[in-house]
Amino acid sequence: MTTAPNREPVFDLPGQRETARSKLDDLAARTGRRPNIAMIVMDDVGWGDFGCYGGGETIGAPTPNIDRLAARGKLLTSAYSQPTCSPSRASLLTGRLPVRHGILIPVMYGQPGGLADEVTLASLLSEAGYVTQAVGKWHLGENVESQPQNTGFDDFYGFLSVSDMYTEWRDPHFFPEVVYSGARSEWIRNAPFNKCFVHAERGGDLEEVEELTIPALSTLDDRWCTYSEEFIRRMAGDERPWFLYHCTRGTHFDNYPSERFLGSSPARHVYQDTIVELDDIVGRLERTLAETGQLENTLIWITSDNGPEMDSWPDSGFTPFRCSKGATWEGGQRVPSIFVWDGMIEPGQRSDGLFDQQDMFTTVLTLAGAEDRVPHDRFIDGVDQSGFLLTPGAESHRRAIYYWLQGTLSGIRIGEYKMMVASTSDDATDVAVRGSGFTGVTQRYTYPRFYNLYLDPREERSYLIRKLAYLDAFVPTMTAHLGTFATYPPKVPIS
Ligand code: CA
Image 1 (cartoon, protein in one colour):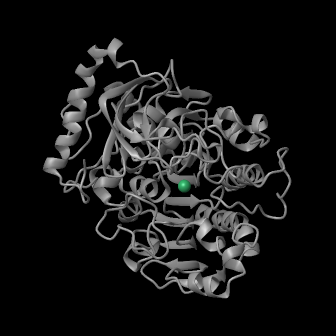
Image 2: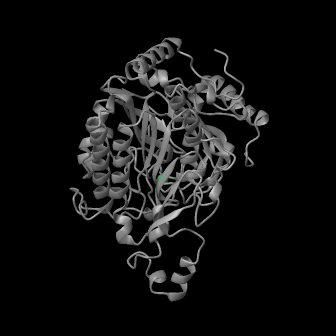
């Protein structure tokens, strides 16, 4: 198939596309409307945290609700985010790599985001007649133009930044040098970021709901879940389809589980307590969909925005892969990804097909019958995976994963092979920082490193010399990928 010049090339697999189309047509005929989309995006949850990914009881944090949903849907083992929060969230909502939308690192302390001139999934769904609701963590910039109510959402109830910014100057255990210093406390209090969680309606001003003290912060996931439950109930009586973008506070450090969950996990640690709480929230949202009769017309997607944060250990998630959040090693970017859609997605599927969170942009537009709204004036990295999701035993439509370490192309994965030309070093000898994605330096390899992720999922044994033939696949793919930046210049300098 010839791909439009502004689109990532795909494996066409026409049979899968037809199956998806006919299932979607049947559903539309049956329900008289387009499907709802419920995205549950967690923060810094590791690939291995849920029971269905090998964690759960094994790590003292049972996740019965998520495991049950995974058994009822499709679980992906090779789904990828970006290495950190804001870049991932922007890529998910724009279908574009960070070097294209321009948000390369997490947005901190009132810094502007970069969504102002981007086209978001929410705005396109809105144009297609969807009601769009964002709940929870935003972290795409506090500037007015980047706020959710100005980037396609009808309503927003959450906070604009990231969990630790509200607490890292309030907790005397972790930050005594700030809490017990009047001058330092004042300095942070005067920093230009909103200290509250907020509510806003499309195009309107922010309304402050409550100041985020630590006790208030510990109630957020519960209250945000209640807000989403109310939205789901309200929409059951509405003719319009809806898009819920529910982003949890947990498990970004520092975790302060709500009273009900504090000490509730077998591990009795705050991280694992929070995983148990998030599992409960998934159960609550699913139950609300069931009670309101919306399960068969709603795609549920559960994921995390990056790998686990190891610098905050032991308040950290679990990944079996190398390194962690911040890195282009698998531990930084491989995330859980579970799709559930009763009657539409065959239950009990697991697939190692390649999936990039950017694919949600294009896939959801297809599900919404709005694929013709994918922009033509910019490069779109997301590919339409509706055929992969809706066809039993299907293959991924994605040919390659491109790993970017901020503005540096780090590597490419094709099939089970990954070629790396640059990475962040993670070979610290200090136990406290070993495995951190944030403590290394960017290193460019003299010869590419080449890993077989099936034989060597921890990327410890580069053996390019035995596999030179594969360069015939990797080099043209890399050249073609870099060529897209000549036609569609990136927003930031790249190397
Ligand atoms: Ca994150």
